[in-house]
Image (tube, rainbow, N blue to C red; front, side, top):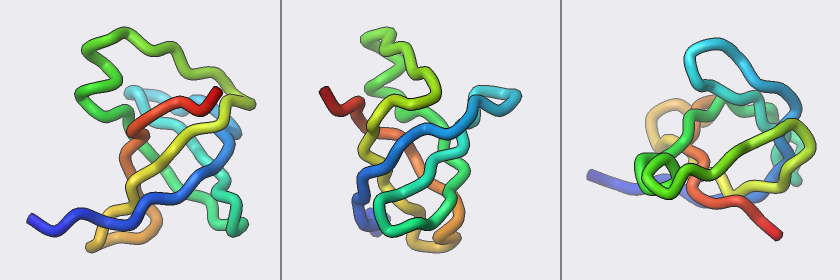
Length: 70
């Protein structure tokens, strides 16, 4: 499976079913879910948090939140 590219952005809002709307530094708005590794360590995500998002190679409007920036 091919991994997508990683970008940084800011969470704009929390959506239903564990999804988040993230605005990347490039200005693109992405709908992202939390990666399994972030769920295992119980990371809390709130609007305004800086995150790293891995974009899907198949749909550039979807992604996976991999890490929270400090």
